[in-house]
Length: 264
Image (cartoon, rainbow, N blue to C red; front, side, top):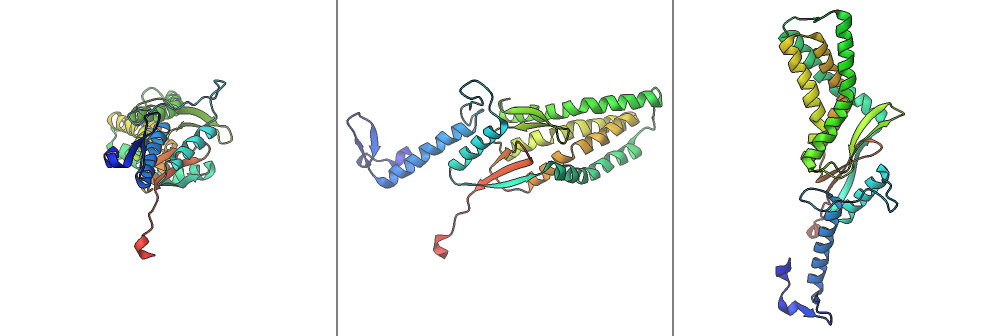
């Protein structure tokens, strides 16, 4: 952009600062500088910009909704982007998640039945049930931790990764407070399903242990909401994706469609 500013289009003021005399070039330069400034505020880590503070003047952490609105406003202020709401309520998310997960759950069971070695109990049935229950309980925090870990790895920082529980639905969650591109968001979203479900399923087929197969099927159901959102992400248009703090899903930011002036 600097190459477009010729010597004849710039003059020096009293303080020695360069000013663009040509109105068209001045407008383009201001748009370029504002775009770079907004990108630095939107992307708090990695090679895309500086870190953004998530605390107020008093040092207290900002509420997730406040951070979400700040990030949303920063993206829209960049210009050239429009938003699309790709969220659903928690009740619908659980229903759609179960429907989405059913084929994967069936695939796990079929793989165990036809690929297992026929070992059903390692110790006794009662103890194996306890082992299955323990594996399932441990899987819940590990599931959310994998979300945060892979979002942090893909983005290059743990900044903005938060954990919590939706008390009304008794549902734990992990969310990313900062915008991601498609690959980054998809990586953190699908990681628990790939590692836990596939891991338990492979172990069940190799050992024939029914508790591992049951754990794989249960983790497939637990990842139903993630799978539902992942499918929406794959078929959604957008350059940036911002995780919603209160609903299940994301806000997609895609380039604004330009109107064809010649057709007017």
